[in-house]
Every structure is written in C-alpha cells, then in structure tokens.
Image 1 (cartoon, rainbow, N blue to C red):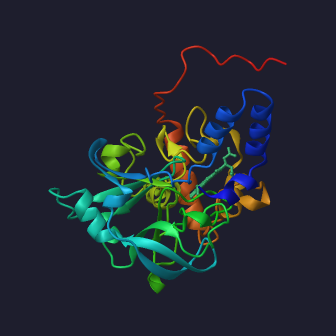
Image 2 (image 1 turned 180 degrees about the horizontal axis):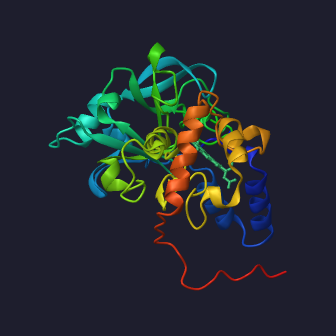
Length: 312
Ligand code: HEC
C-alpha cells in the first residue's frame, strides 16, 4: 500500500469520510483496500496491420514489432532533432509480409484519420526508415512517472497538434527529409501491399491520349494529393473529395484553385500544407486533370434521395 497515493486523492478522502458516517469500520477498511491497491500500468494494446489488396495478412502486437532502439534525427514536422524509440522498417516489412514477394510492389501507409499515402516498397526498404513506438524527447509526466516505467508520452505533431500514437513512421537519413518523397504518417495503423490501379480504379482520365496534360496531372495528384484527397471516393479522407458530388472546378474559379494549392494559408487556417514547389505548368496539369475528371464521375456514395435541409 502506498500511503502517499491515498492521501493525495481528494475523491478517495471524501469517499472515506462518507462511509465513516454510514456503514462503519468494515466498509472503511474495504474502501481503503480497493482505493489503495498499487497502480498497475495498463497493458500496451497497440497493433499494426499488414494487408494485401484489402485482405488482412498479419496483425502484429507492439511487443512483436522487435526491440526498439533510440534513434535521433532531424524531423521536418517538429523542425528540430527528435529521439524516438523505434524499430527499423525493412525487417518489419519482411516480418509482416513474410511469404510474400516485395519486389517492385507498391504500398499504402494508412493512418487512423484517413490519411493514406502510396509509396514504392523499394523506398520503404531504404535504410533510414523507422517506425517509432515512443517519443524519447518528452520527459515523463508526473502522472506516469511513479510506476518507474513511464507510459509512452508523445509530443503533439503537425498543424493540428495531433497525438502521433499508435505509431509514427519517420526517416533518419539526411537526404530523407522531404515529405513529398519520404512521407511521415503519424497515427499509422496499417501497411497495405497493392497497386494504385487496383486500389483506386476510378481516378484515371480514361480515353484521353497519353500526351494530354491530364495524365501528368494524375501523376502529380497521386504523388502529392491523394494521400489526403479522394477523386471519385478513392484516396485519402483527410481533405474533401475533389470530384464528387461536385468537382472542384464546378464551384471554384481556376485562379482561386491555383492560389489555394500553392498557399492554402492565404484562405484558411486549415491543415492542408503549402505547395510552393509546384510551378505554373504543374498547376495547369492539375487543373487539366480535375477538368477531365469532371466528366468521369463515379460516386458509390451518391444518395438516391436528396439530403434534408438543415432545420433552423
Ligand atoms: C496533408 C493533407 C493534404 C494534402 C497533402 C493536400 N491537401 Fe488539399 N486540403 C486538405 C484539407 C484538410 C483541406 C480542407 C481545408 C483545409 O484544411 O485547408 C484541403 C482543401 C483543398 C482544396 C479546397 C477545397 C474546397 O472546396 O475549398 C483544394 C482545391 C485542395 N485541397 C487541393 C489539393 C491539391 C491539388 C493537393 C496536392 C497538390 C492537395 N490539396 C494536398 C488536405 C490536404
């Protein structure tokens, strides 16, 4: 029994006082017994899923991911050096997908909030990729300290100050700091092997000649936007679908769309990142892609009946 813990809780003291007036000594003893049991840390229930074309291949509990080691690296989200307890990504992928070939495959890293970034498996296998299990740069809070084993505490991440748990994928190499090429999903819950054409069959501007700028727009879109935005309900769910029910080009003027993509902060305090590296030709290609998709709508979520109007 830890007397300090008993004294420190006003709620428990109140309970004890009330029982004293009521049912007497036995109840008081029982309550003290229950209230002053040593605290146990709840078991770590975190899991990471491995899928192939939507089918679950394996589910690994946090204890099965390997022995985490401290890894220190500069982080573009935190804008400074961070130390995480982490396991290397390449052996983890081989373990999660053991028995499956990873050669030339594509993967989709899925986060809890609907962020889903496509990435070549070859890139994920680069040395320098890690999955963080806990944040070493945050001192344990007094609430977690007494057990000795501090529960994983994380510094909030990104513009929305999100909790990175259960897992944060990061890169340690000096040349792995660009988010466009080396994405860093937080709240990582699943890694899926698939191909863009299979996973997102309705995002292509079918029927257009290969020379049409819409195809280049599609490549830019899958490289930088689909992690957050869907077209025809296929893609990430962090931002709005840009094609259904209405295409972005049906309700916003082209100049405004361009300006928004380059610097959304001029319009809103939102969570979309700026894209200052996209030049006029890139923006033309993206707009050509959106215009092409406007006449290629596919909406499995379309409602048969109109939405009810908001009631005052
Ligand atoms: C990290 C997630 C993320 C990425 C990456 C991203 N966006 Fe967004 N986007 C959002 C969110 C969230 C919104 C909703 C408003 C906000 O928070 O800014 C949004 C809003 C928009 C809008 C305005 C929609 C409207 O109806 O007002 C456009 C256009 C847009 N995004 C285009 C793009 C394009 C094109 C790309 C790729 C070059 C892109 N976004 C990349 C998250 C993202």
